[in-house]
Image 1 (cartoon, rainbow, N blue to C red):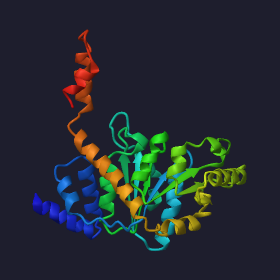
Image 2: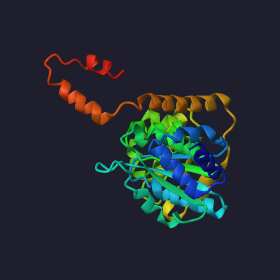
Image 3: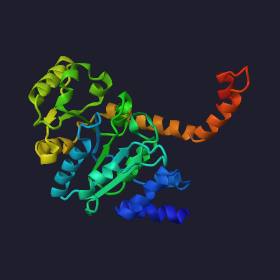
Image 4: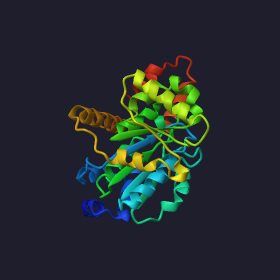
Length: 297
């Protein structure tokens, strides 16, 4: 087994797509070999990781497609983790993003993987941190993570990304003053997509005013992703390295470490078994949830 792990780690370092797919499957399925593999890889912390989030219908996948065109034109190797809603039947990813990105799916410089959110807050499974680190060890120039974009807890994407892009559309213009503070906090940039729609200029001005009132220097890009318009400046922003901030880097790693430790400690908790035992315990008239969970803790 040790030779298998070492061999896979070497193939990962060389950027072989088959090895990348196998390693991601090990991690996603919780293989007993995954932990050994993760301890052996060299994670390139200089690779830009772009987290893309925002409400459903904002055109996140179309924007990823447009950014992929820019990366391909620059002959860059790019990986995309598309966080899909879990199927209520198979608990697997619905693969919608793969279908929308089918144009690039077989390109030799593009690796796309759909990941089931499995009900994790913000559409992010804990395993995505480990999967992202695998990609950062596999000779990619850019890694993009597109979240499902549901609920306030989509701020979890900030725990993974060197830069976070929040995608909005002009129709949200009336709500800009009520944007969740958490979403405003995590955004390193906003993309106003579908900027050819009515009200786009007014929305952009309102968003920039809100940011100025909050003393935030955050760029707002106006894009029409399906026409490849406004994508080049966004791509240039993505590729500009962030100013060295050791404190921020430590905070990012601390957040990742916290989530990984939390996941490790929860591995013995099976929700189906929990439900079964809870259903049985509820039959007793003196049921107390704190006595019940004491057996698990």
